[in-house]
Image 1 (cartoon, one colour):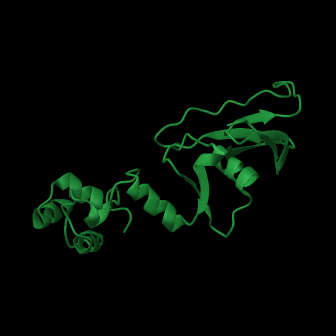
Image 2 (cartoon, helix red, strand yellow; image 1 turned 90 degrees about the vertical axis):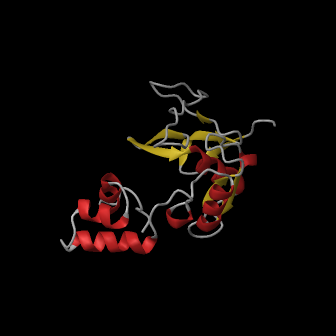
Image 3 (cartoon, helix red, strand yellow; image 1 turned 30 degrees about the vertical axis):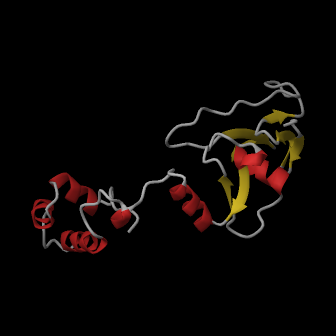
Amino acid sequence: MLEQWKTIADYPDYAISNLGRVKRLTSRTCAKAGSILKTPGRSKSRPYLSVDLCFLGGKSTELVHRLVAIAFLGEPPFPGAEVNHIDGNKGNASVTNLEWITSSANQQHAYAAGLQCAKGESNGQAKLREVEVLEMRSLHASGSASVECLADRYGVHKRTALDVVNRKSWAHI
């Protein structure tokens, strides 16, 4: 695919390519015009490519896939629209790999592609049911049961009971 460049709407000193690369259009002391910006390495906590863009003495961190989508697919077609990576690779910000979809459709795609694990009762490894989790939290919050008591009562390890009442597990409810 031939690389095409478009000026980034809110950042006229920068351009984004259909392949997900960002370059500076004007020279500054730290960067020459035409220089390609580096995107920091991805991690589990920051899985998306991002780039720092300077403007009016300030700096803003922007997600590369959103910049590509806005430049080449157009503005979000409806409020709350999200950019989906069709192949599931969050490091692939090429326009051919991006589409605007609803948040719900994005979640469904993530589960179908195996990018997210099932939560709660739909996880085959779950030892508890939602109703039990809510009971455990209620009993613990009211002071009616200690973590040890809850672990015995619901047949789970003490650490599991502690994680439930502290919302480190089952955090989605």
